[in-house]
Length: 173
Image (cartoon, helix red, strand yellow):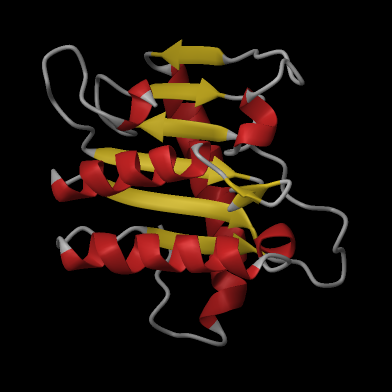
């Protein structure tokens, strides 16, 4: 959550690129508590002027109407504060099991204080509770972030270009 909020100087990110395979709406029938925290942190960053770009695996998100509702509400709520989160669903119907499993956050891409965090977990209690998963993350700062951000842009644009055929208002990064 630290990458989504203010830094040690109290400054919110200028940009956030958030990429996850799955956001969980519930865990074993109980409301999830991790996903709302992440969504609230993204909304708060948007309220402070952060430009947000999100990508979630569409094959997985489309399986759960609660998840779709959470993500659509996030886009609507951030639009209400003037900095809309753009959500891209990485959807390949011909390969439903080949989801995009990337889990990372890029903060301030293109700026001197850019950071990249490669994560090992999705957004949900299932990944954070009961010692089920061991946590490993890689935090990168400096010039190397440019390469990660460039690859992210190409990856997102791959999916957005296909979506543009159906909705011409979708913009490439």
